[in-house]
Amino acid sequence: MYARLKLFAGVAVVSLAATAAQAADYTPLPCYDAAVIASGRAPPGAVPCYTPPPVVVEEFSGWYLRGDIGITNQSVRDLNNALPVTSVTNVGLGFDASPLFGVGVGYYFNDWLRFDLTGEYRSKANFHGSQIVTSGGSTYTDEYSGSKSEWLFLLNAYVDLGTWNNITPFVGAGAGASRNTIHSFQDVCTTVSVCTGGSVAFGDTSSKWNFAWALHAGLAYKVSKNFTVELAYRYVDLGDAQSGDLYTYNGINAVYNPMEFKHLTSHDVKLGLRFNLDSFEMFSRPAPVYYAPAPVYTQPPPVYVQPPLQSRG
Image 1: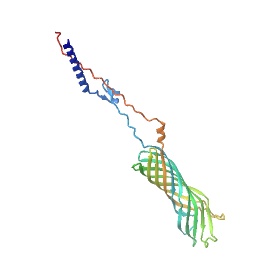
Image 2 (image 1 turned 90 degrees about the vertical axis):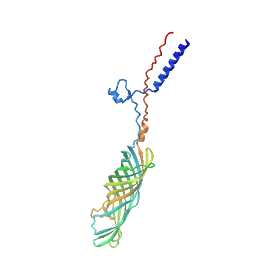
Image 3 (image 1 turned 135 degrees about the horizontal axis):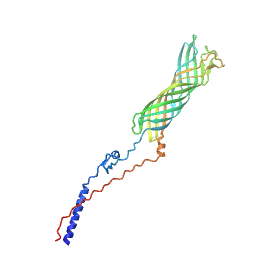
Image 4 (image 1 turned 45 degrees about the vertical axis):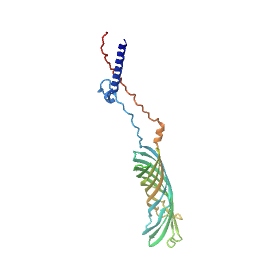
């Protein structure tokens, strides 16, 4: 009896060892693409392959708001008037610096191209200068004063040139319209021999719309995902402007002759802030959560080992 029990124990140990060895050598069943299984081209009982969850990549596209403040440095090429003259020499025509304030809305098309639509108020810049005028055989000097302001609206496109340590250089161009206003224009003739007792002419406030265009260059610093600060230079062509009709100190005016400001330009320095509106979307919806599918486990078939035959003796 003891010998028979010992034999059965040996058979059991051999069976377990064989099963363990076969389990170690077990090759998982082949998996199939879910589309293949859905089309019915996979064999019966086919197991779909595990597909890892998609990687969420941060997109640079999206809407943003912007605000700007800056300083203007403006100039005018020439002053014209309807009154006939033989020759005119400009002396020191120019404007004082003035502040500008702007807002806008833009869109990041991708990580290197963006657009925005801006509107800004360019506050009053004092005007000063004079002209030496020859007319009718006489030469005299006119001294001018007044101020100018604008509303400027531009559609701009920018190219971001790459980012290093959160600093992005950029260039851009824009086109739009400018409403140029001349305020309180005054013309003083200072040559007593021509302007007996001196002479003063005035022009009322007048506004004029013009085509405008601009070129941009600057550096942007990305403070956070949704907040960027930029320092930029801009050259802007504002078109022309004109004063109201000129009249003398005693209200006399024999001809319509406003003073025309030809080819106004400005070199601007701006400090801007950009706020990405994607931050609102980030806080208004829960972050996506991905769960890996449960692993498919197939029990290997049992291995049966025939015990050796023995006699009953």
